[in-house]
Length: 321
Length: 295
Image (cartoon, rainbow over all chains, first blue to last red; front, side):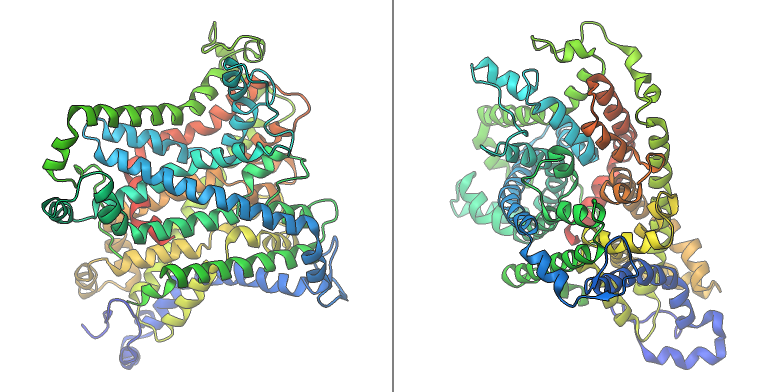
């Protein structure tokens, strides 16, 4: 019997299983069962992931406005168009600025909250829940709160009320790109939504740091506080930090909801996905250019992921352990 | 990858000595800092509730009011009576979409994850790498090609279009595979010795012994499904197919702004997830702690 059960934990594959197949019939063969279990998923993956990608590769070489079965081959014209499109290029700048703000602030905020919560002895679960609760809120809902209540450009918005107490004039937070106050709105909404999630990751990692390290450090005369944090906690959190930064970067790259809702019809500050949305689903329905843009973005994010993987030693290779 | 659930309520990994050095002052400072942060994090929730139960003149009034002078209970029904946005319909759509999304993903991705982890097949590694490759392509970036496909299937403005394309999550499949790699083999082997097929062993032994993991994934998936915005926005061209998130976003661009209604609608849209949070937080936290790292 043992010959038919799985062999090897991580890598399925022993070819010798197939020797048993004739004896046990189709329904018991592991090949049949493999496809029985993975088939529905793989078919869906092909239809809804691989086919669309292939199709958009095809579309990106055609003039495809209002149609998904185009006939006019235009070569690299769509790529040339999208790469010379100022809106598209500005959106890449927007992403860079956005990432430069949101990645470090979320990293610091979630780590800070985790350190605070980790030291609490009373009401720990309560505070953890409070910081975690925004994770349940959608970007759409949070963007509405930010736009309509906190950073409402008129007098009765919370932010303008508060600065009003100090005699500062009302600020049109979202209505004006100069000065670019809209960044404050956009970064804070995401910070509020995301920090609790990453705090949980840091909390889990903090729990995994062996106590002995702190005890050894104390014996060696390290002062609790900055020294232990700098030389023990931070290095021990390296893997988590790296993963968190990568996750934040990918999430920032795909930012859409809050920009779309907060900035609405504004002509500034739009990230790549909003530009793609406008291009493919706006007035022109230019699927050719939209597909070209999507592929350029995909290529960029793959590059960033691989690049960061190289630099920070976090790759997908580890699962073959 | 470890699949043991870290206990986040464990006492801090700090030596007793270090704690004493901080002393009472240190503790007061710690609780003060945490308290201030907590208040800041709760302000948006407070604003939703405050605005939802106020009248518009109170919200937009000259003087900032911390609380409504009388609680406007009547506001609760207003989003449902609004003629510009069919809020009730959008809530129903979201419920259908989030539930079917969750059930579908759990079913399809767990089976695939199990197949990849536990059923020997000589090309299993190649299949697994094909799945991994899809993780490199962010789903949000593929919304243009996916829309092209779904619209040519005629699935725009339908539940099929909202739900089915999202069911084949390479990431969720990956998480299940990692989980099943760590599932104790003896249990399955005993079941197979008793004459159960792979299929039988999966449903009678593996799934019943993995309910915690399924619950964790289900919670995360449900929240993501309920809160999804870009895909429902793309697919829901007609207001009758809007999910609640798309309906909310339409308030932001409406000509007339009706503050108390908008915030009541926001509050109602968040309510189901607050319940999920209150009752399923244990699984949610465990799910994130176990799986988030691998994102």
